[in-house]
Amino acid sequence: MGKSKAPKYATTNYDTGGLYGSSTTSEKGTTYTPESWMTGLSNTTTGGLNTTLNNMLSNDYANDPNFQAYQDLKQYHQQGL
Image (cartoon, one colour):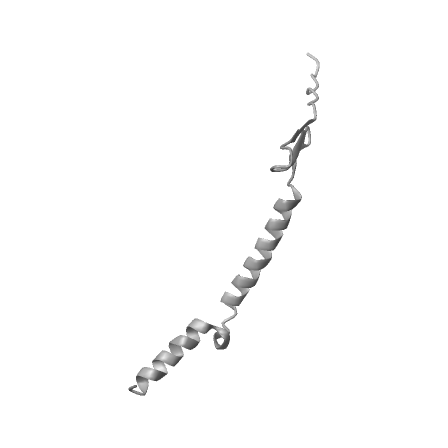
């Protein structure tokens, strides 16, 4: 018996009409291209999240309003006021 060749797959494109983006599927796999508003939102959210997480992990208690409020309250009670 001879070797049979795998069938060629058609390339397929799908576009959501500006809602979620588009995708292309071929024999090499699927690629997805989001709409620009989605990319912008993702970049903005990720940038803000990284800043927030870095601030939380910085251990800079001098600039933490909650820690400062706790210290003020602790000092207030120690003075017996």
